[in-house]
Amino acid sequence: MKKAICSLLLLMATGASVSGQTGAEALVVESASFLGAFFRNMPDARVAVVRFENESELSDSALQKIYQMLVSRLEGEKSGRVLDLLLNFNGGRGEFNLVQPEALDFLIELKLIQNKSKTGLGLTVFSRLQNRVLTVKYFERNISKGEMDLLNTRSHAFANLGFSLLLEFESRLGLMDIQSIAAVDGQEQYFFFYPDEIIIYNARETRLEKHFQFKLAWTRPVFPVLHPEGKLLLFRLGSDLVLTAGCNFSPTAQMQTFRDGRWQESRKIDFVPFRFVTLNQAPYLVGARYEEGRNFFKGKVYFLPFSAAAASDASAYEKATCPALSLDFSTREGQLQAVHAIDRDYTYRLFTADFEEKKPLSEKKGATLAASNGEWLAISDFSRGSDQLFFYDIRDGGLRPVYTGKVAGEIQFMAAGNWHGVRGFWAGVRQPVDGMERLMVQFWGKRNE
Image (cartoon, rainbow, N blue to C red):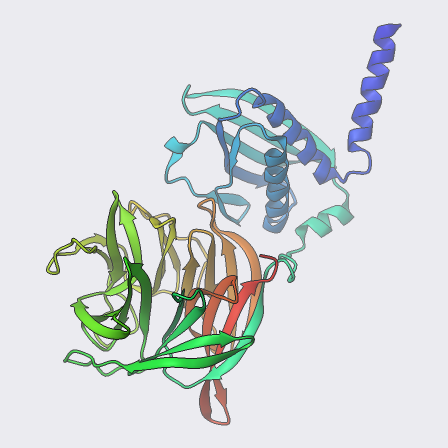
């Protein structure tokens, strides 16, 4: 009798746990509970889904939602260390960042299967260390047509939780880059890079007030260009503020140092610096070279030893990438994480910190990009009249869509930055007006951070 009562109570509890849930949610709950129990005594195990295939009537958008629900549930189970390596879903198959499989202890494979009126989720757990399959499990639920239609609907993150346009104003033509850094008094200063000068602004509420400006004199030869392009870098070296400015119309970049209350040109660099990074506990400037007078970078990345003790004539070493219309580096705590590029076919390309290339993502096209540390990546569309911005979360090495924003005009350049403490991206947008052209500066940021 006790056994019967216990069985009845267990049945009631099981029914209560899934009552009110949709079919897809019930599938996710059962799968996450099973995996949570499997990894319960392995809190330090590094676990990730590395394959997700679809043989059901659900679309790639539905797979994205199911995957996100499952990862969220697994993180809530607090069993094992769950890594999110998803890059994209394409044609019923997940694409994952698997450049360092040795960083994982357990691999999970998922498959959605259509079984008459029901949809099933099969999962396989593989131990990389033991080199064998540990368990295979299958759950299935009825997913109604209405729920299936809802799951198949393409959706983006809510606007108030994603990136939004926080600031917009008109600039004079020729602006190539915007960077900012905190001054000695803690106030943020904004550096606007034009072909012939750099203008420094202080922020006052929603406006910028000019603080200082200085002219730039470029080393001959100076190459003629249709559109000037360039990159600005700011960093501190001891008590000095260092600025580098490189462009597509001069073979060398300038380095300026703010010392004793004034800007002084200190040296020339034969590539365009992007980041100040640390490799093997040594500081380097990392960057690339423009093809002379053109709008793309050559297919190499350069690392120049740079510190107070480094020799001024030190040579840079190089790593091969691809010719790129746009290029940027994601870093975390000064360490290089990845190289992001838009090649000359307008295709997004990803290289690891070891310069191993990931397979180019199909239909991932763009024109320019920028990385905000190792957390966010913004890529523009390649449309002239009505452009778009696509924002991605790259914190776990993947490329997960966060938000899409419409832009009137063509995005000319992008740069990671901040505005009044809000992190985000600057965008320079060319807009035709009555046969003329104007440049609008926009800042896109996350209001909830």
